[in-house]
Image (cartoon, rainbow, N blue to C red; front, top):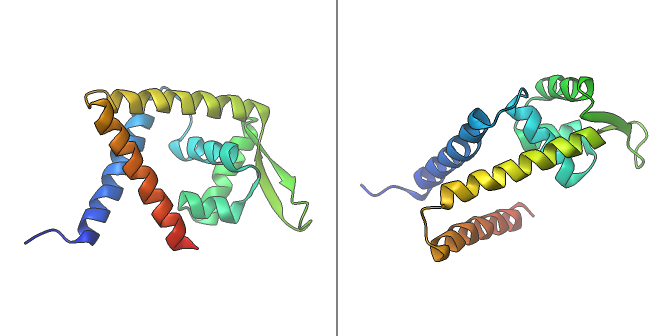
Amino acid sequence: MKDSVLQDMIEFKDNYYRILFKKFFKDYNSDMFPTDQMALVYLLLHGPTSLKDLSGWLNLEKGSLTTVARRLEKEGLAMKVEDRMDRRSILLSISEKGKLYALEWLKAFDVYVEELLGPYTAFERESIVGAISLLNAFMRQMDN
């Protein structure tokens, strides 16, 4: 029986996360939890964010994200700031120290991906990266 599109998507999601991220976090020499690293990168790329939005992106319950936020604050990597649009809301913002760490992590991740793609030809690498970009664009369009 031929695999269904759903089976392919589930396998892709599992492989994408397990191979790209879990393996990288295991190999990357860091004392931080992977979720903390991902939260920092999100804050670097998106700016101050509500805990609700960040927990949704990380696929965490809000209570679990509170623990992440506390660890980041304790290490001086992030801080809570008042939302200028809604003074009742609090946003999590990356600190200068956090920016330096997140940029270092992104550079290391880029090197890691280049190593993974190394055995492929330039055309194949461009095709893989292009397919990922196309899938992301498709998903963003479906989300609107």
